[in-house]
Length: 436
Image 1 (cartoon, rainbow, N blue to C red):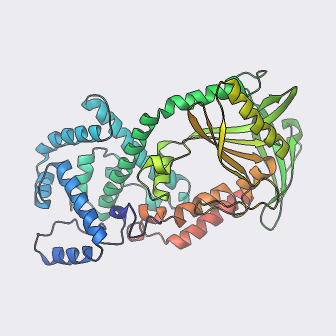
Image 2: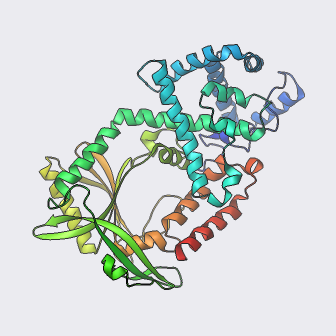
């Protein structure tokens, strides 16, 4: 379900519909012509009425008011703001299960605000980099982290429409960041990430290597002129790579590899281990049209590995099982998908993914953790980086636009982006970067 659909859980952020931010703040009287027109539009969808009533109750309770008129009075009477803010922070602290005094709750809420800004800035810095000036956050909103102040800005006609929309957007993103933080504390994700690293260093990687020791090599690859598919790849030492001047259709890609041991054989492996940052999890909730991180974010811990061949991939998979056993844990593989073999088609369910993508993907349950593994050969990883319709940079653009997230966060009537045109331009932008 798109985040732009009528049944979206993010209706309050949609600029199409009765809850849209308008040119002027909503200050009309209860029985005015403007209010009657707005109510008539709201009544076209009974679901919107229910959502509006729930939002209004939350809003009034949060600000300790009984009507829209009282919100206007609160905007004017700034002497009431500190007391209302302290009360609101305590309410948030209890809702998100934050232990500590008011200063500790405030610090945690400030982290949620920084995560909300990071969501927008991460998109501005990459997917919409050429349009950074179009989508940058209004200064007054970026420096405001107090949820009560952000709420009051939404109803303050002294603020421009863009600023009022961004105040609303920041509050919603802060709420998602708070839900994610609560989930991470409940699942003890920080300690699990440390335990996963300890497992890899203690049982998986070669004992002959020091922790963090890496061997630098280059992948010299040739790519098809039609779709930039990798047709050939060779592993070169830095000395060998220094003698290569890549021509058109060639790439020289640096990777730094660890190794693991199978008997007396040392098998090199490039590894990228990650714990999703809060802003990435917020974006995943938006793409999935979901507010519950327990449902939408199932890949908090992840490892991507690149090996020389399919036989090395199988050896690594078997080595993981033996390593888990040495660590006194059974390892069970779940949701296995393997398209490393030629002519096996990938059937990804994610919006924007390509059926040309080749990889092995599974979740490993071990040691009280559930870790996502994505495993490539050198060739499939290079395709994952560079091939047309497969490259991850292209995939990021497509999934953000096609799920409706870009339009939700940067609606056209405020940011003046023609989303279909921008999507095509950004795909071409990344293709040019890849192939240059």
